[in-house]
Figure (cartoon, one colour):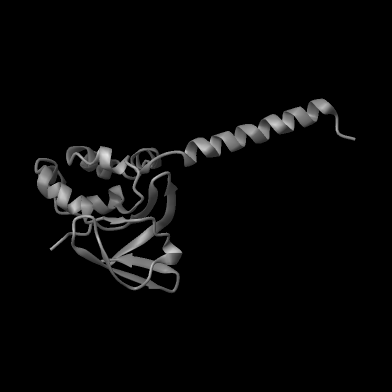
Length: 158
């Protein structure tokens, strides 16, 4: 027989766990990126480009999000230069965003139109997803307004 006190403790622990998951799942793209800790450069760029309100908006959006390591691969001074050019930065960042919520299992090889109006080349093969040659290194980070797929390179529009 289960003691009532033990059942109450178990129920409280279960509710705490569910509430914790709900709080995590209730974050938008920007807050999720901030909390992940590996998108610091991207978050700084989103702020500099004036895209915070957009990416906190209803969406849904699919963001192919370069990690800090991806930004580090760019030539020295590139990120600093882009942070000083909000229009160019906005064009690059919106090239990483597709309208709608597309989970990795739903990606089909072909082209997808980005929010900046240009297309990206998507490749889905053997359970791996690539966008313009960049590898998705962490897929399906669900947010309240879309999904984030971390990529290992910064992709550039034409």
